[in-house]
Length: 326
Image (tube, rainbow, N blue to C red; front, top):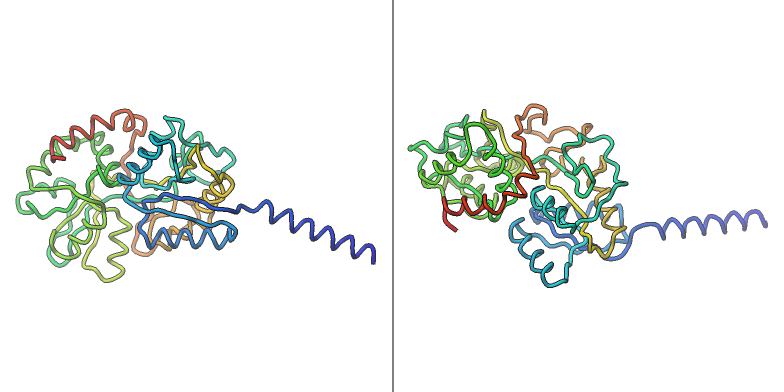
């Protein structure tokens, strides 16, 4: 009987200890994921971490960063975790020492290109930006320059890099890509392109026939196509820019254990399988592409020098605004 009671007491103690080690409390997340996708991500995380209460705020990367900058100025940074579109914004925060490194994060199976080498932020997927087109009215394009032809003047929907993190990555990648650069953006402007908003409004314009073409993230297009919208996507021959939707912990985080658990989930195989189910290319090598997507290895990805983009971002945005207007 004593042995039974002793074993029971050990089991109770172990269970209590394990529960104490599980993350708990409130986790505040700022994210640029679409609301339905963000809710799926939070629900899946909470299923693995039921003691954590997640308070999440969603907006485009640009507006979200404006809110965060205002909080930094006021000395009242609310999020524990920042989960936005591109590494330019995360890299800038790292440079300013506003992110917390997580060196213990398990990234062994991943290509190193998808994560910050010092583990201040971590890519969670590949979102490539190609040319969406209305399959009822438009021909399949093959080159980015197809969008500058006179016959499509005023018929191209483009998100703004002042709002969209994906569009910002496109801008910086194109400036370094042979045969594109500022000449391409000036040609778009001459052809009646007026960038505005994010990927959602641009996709709605193409699927609704108000535009023939759009420069839009692939996942958004393929999801709309699977739901019956008359849209498809082309990956131009020059190559495509991409973002990894990175996630990082703020240096001011109030709930670091829960923040680390959130990152652990996103880069786990289970988290990557959720990425594929949500209609995006996972970066885990053992997770297959979603239906309708090419393999990641089949897409020509344009490189992005994040450090150069960070240091030159202010001037790049000024030049961009001078071409298209504020």
